[in-house]
Image (cartoon, rainbow, N blue to C red):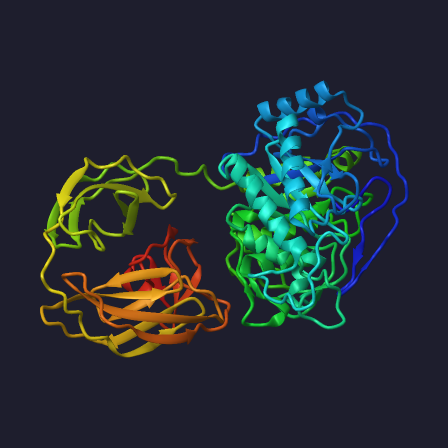
Length: 612
């Protein structure tokens, strides 16, 4: 966290950083608060930083931290031998090593997560070489193993991250300190396993939201650090548990409404969070769109009291911001762009710090825990569907097998099925599927699992063994598809159409390829979803016959539309009632919560989507 041993963090102006000194403070220790009801399963998190030093807020043992915190970040582990070595060290302050380990274990026994945070204002880390990267991985892993931490919080500040001139594409960074940090985080996460390891980040607004206005690698006369966290966040978004931007010690930041927002009130917190939940064009370049994070990945970072950082926000203003973000109770000064009805799965709150929280009578943890518990979502669905029954083969060729099965049941509803064969699988929304691309005269074993909206998978069906037909003597490929064209497009989808191919025996379908993705269809039309806004995609379409012969390709390059308020429908997204999406040039409103699947496009399922 930016506030360190004896000074507050850098204040952020729109394109530069400056220092603001804090006065030394002290107070008598306060008694521990009575714990609020424990955070419910699937509820909102409260994260707090614990000082591994004394800056006037007072020392507090880990086991005496307010029980209303769900996660405690030990701050900080810092560089050893200089900022560029990659070597990170940590020694507990005012503790014996044995007592510190025991307190970490105690918090974990209470269901809390304890992370090691690296950086802070005094902990500049620059991984400018692969040697520094490797030293970072080794030393950080050693700290985690030694003390039993649950994960890592990245709190790089100062000049730890920057962008070299010309490094303008956040999706493909080239600056060594960025590239090596991404590699190091992925390596550490893989070492422990994403399901067990917690990875979080706590950048300042300067390094994230300022990237909407300025991007350090592409702008002239602006700070090279502007938006420098964006490539790191984007590259690790699949393993990043949450992002807790420091909404304090910040200058005014331009929101998605192109207005300045100033810290210390609900307006600032809603505007900053909405940028992450909606996504935004980096440096206002529509061709460089930073995709939105998942709701649960975003937390508000706040000072625990007025001594902890500039921009302290009162309890009432924080909860007004949460009313807007979680409940959709819009502010008069800023309307959320990503969802007009709120983000019910929003992640929660982070504070600097647990020490300042105790200094202030536990106001932050106690009052916000009670508020969040009162609106916590219901316990998650953990009950899987029943296993599919009566799996049979309805047809086969030399390269495909068609299957069908009886429908599964679920306490909340089955959303689809996964067919497994060998090391491969395919998903379908119905109770039948055709598995293509198989080898002739070969035995395959198929099993099917049902899936619900929460992602729970059923037990596997009884295995079915099917041998594909003998190879055909047909070696003549079909003709290439004709008149390939884009018949519709949105910010995240392109609909293709083409004229039918001919074949000496018969065309069985078409293979559409874009990038590293291939999709097979029997029709002469395909809607490709899940694309990025303002991005050029090259599509190749080939015809296929029963013998597996492929025609020459018809190719077409299409650029998706720029992002808009209502996001384009996409598969694999958790939608809630009232969400607006676009599809085929039309706008639809979600009728009931669900996780979308291919085949559930809004025109196909009026039970889920209402045409506006």
